Length: 72
Image (cartoon, rainbow, N blue to C red; front, top):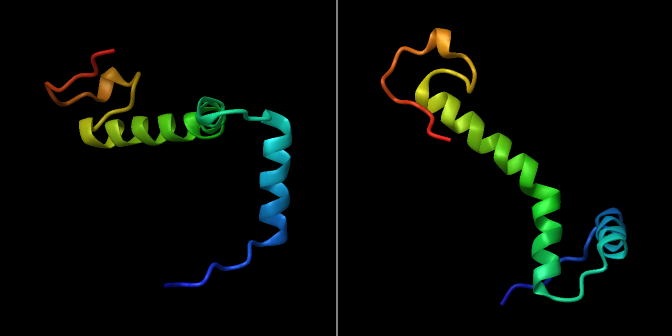
């Protein structure tokens, strides 16, 4: 069984400030907090993956050289 490492004081202060700001009361509140914090980042990552897969960016139809398309 591994020992728990001590949390970095800066990280602990950051987490404490997040909890004070969002004041989660249940699991749904925590889920909403994570959506707020990570939603834009994950969306950007997914869009970049789609750009790479299709070979053109979201609004760059001039450089489209494939029959694949974005639906939605």
